[in-house]
Length: 327
Ligand SMILES: [Fe+2]
Image 1 (tube, protein in one colour):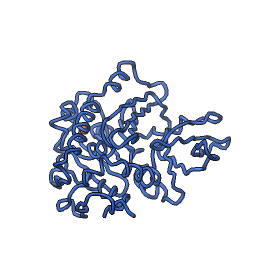
Image 2 (cartoon, rainbow, N blue to C red):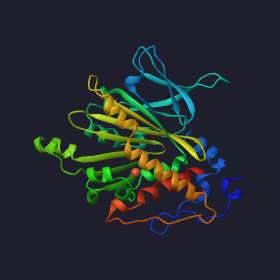
Image 3 (spheres, rainbow, N blue to C red):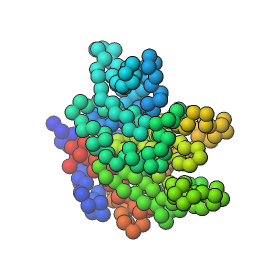
């Protein structure tokens, strides 16, 4: 019996986003859905676990793929291996791929490789942060969110909410130049930044990078934010579903050795205003999804005004539909 046969009826998503309904609301609060996602979404796809610099020879790294513990180990020849640690059985070898210094793990031995599924991602990240391999961990923050994990992913895949909800972000970024593109497992968000006095002294090539806001979403639960320039930084956000109505967002921050964050900068990340604004929105959306009066909605789609369009949310929901066999 499939999930479809046991749940309230709904209209399946269509390929064309402007004609498609959204996912039905029960997908965001049904425990059976989360069980299926653990198997088919987190269990079959590539999830960021650590930066390669966090795995030293003789010092295994203990991480997670969603809520399943995994161990990264570096051998004497420098190669990196991943194992699932299950107390009830012997450790199971998992697949690991390192891309621009970032180690992703896939629990499915049959899955296509990460680089094969996202052929442009590594060069794209290196284009913004050529120092990606040399970075080391400088901070980590865990946020608790009272919403389904998909609500927050969807929040990060559209910027319709940015101007009303993120006054700081909208001042930093030129929203008229905001663009979002999805291709398979990767969605790119890019925008020009508003001009600042620091940009005035940069050469054309460097200024072009510094002036851009660049953000990659990698299905299902990894987001990468690149900060180029004099203090290169990669900020990786992972999402861990701990229940149908609750998940954790972890921010992993990496900078060059000797260029760590000050205590004030760490405190700013701990209290990240944009993240807190998003958490408040997502928790309100989760409450709305629980309403008996709501089942499915529509997407706002406007190719000419990408910053207020939800086409990337539709792309994500189609991937969820395919994974859960909701077509
Ligand atoms: Fe947001």
